[in-house]
Amino acid sequence: MPPFKVAVYLYPSADILDFSGPTEIYSMRPASGEAIFKIKTFAHHDRVSSETGTMVYVPNGTFEQLEAKLADYDILVIPGAHFEVFDKLLPSKEGKELTALLRKFTSLPPRDGAGTRILQSVCTGSLILAASGILAGRTVTTHHMGFDALKKYADEAAGGDSKVNVVKKRWVDAGTTEAGVRIINAAGVTSGIDTSLWIYEQLAGKENADFVAETAEFQRRQEAWSA
Image (cartoon, rainbow, N blue to C red; front, side, top):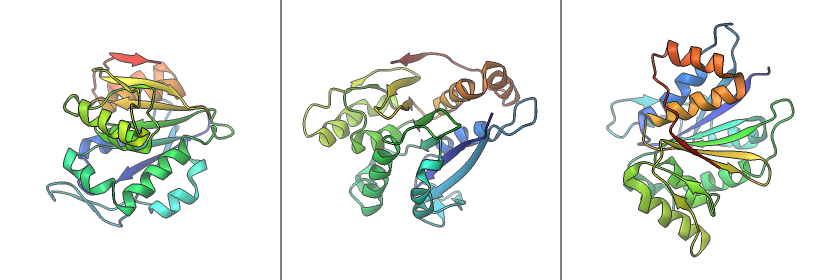
């Protein structure tokens, strides 16, 4: 089993647990001790502050570096933030580069040897996916306070009715793109851990995923919608 390569995007005021939860799960090794995932965090900035300024993160890669090697990555994680963050981020140069990156990622077939490619949003990170236009016609979810915002961004990207079906589930498997990239939406915050464990199970088996969940002392919840 080859190590699967995970890229986690960081941006100012992104929710801490949205990206630290999946990063923790993908960092954990199964009972065999062999690493299943290799993780890179990347950003437009060399230092990224949390919303309250409590913590400052130093990503181990730049946006430009990740963009140049995008085809090498099997999983791309997009965390969420408070709604007003997107009012500033999405119209910006950085926001436009990010939504273009998502469109490119979802057009790439799975990497040779990996057999899969997954775009994973956590919480309101799905609003960024919606703004990129890649959720049109899909059943999706986000934080329960963001259902209307998700539909709004998807409709704006589509230039009309995007025909997204927003459901209240802990997470959603929104299906695959024409290139075979699977889109997974987690609802609010901690549900990003649920989706990460589900992805872990798909790629490394239930026994390994359950071992990691037990090690993290996290009770898995299977409430989901699957395409």
